[in-house]
Amino acid sequence: MSAALRSVWQQVVHTKRAYMNPHEDFGRANIFRAAIGTYIGAFLLFKWNSSRKAKALKNEKTTKKQAIAEDALARAGLA
Image (cartoon, rainbow, N blue to C red; front, side, top):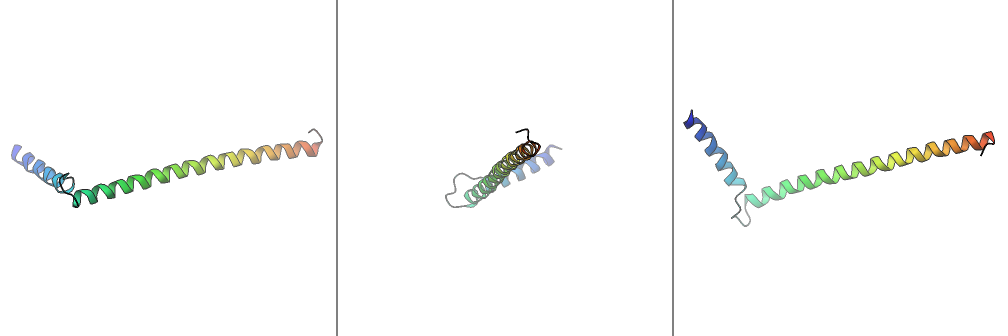
């Protein structure tokens, strides 16, 4: 059991060293970090943009509702 666990752990460590080695200047580690950073940045940008659009849509809906209510009051002669 421990031999199997040790071999699995060695594969994990080997993979980590292959992609996350901080001693490489222009190697896989920097490319990997740049790719992950790009994906995280794009995700955060899309989340920010969608929340901004949702707020704008909500404000537009409330403005329309208010305009409709004011128009109805004006037609009824109460405003």
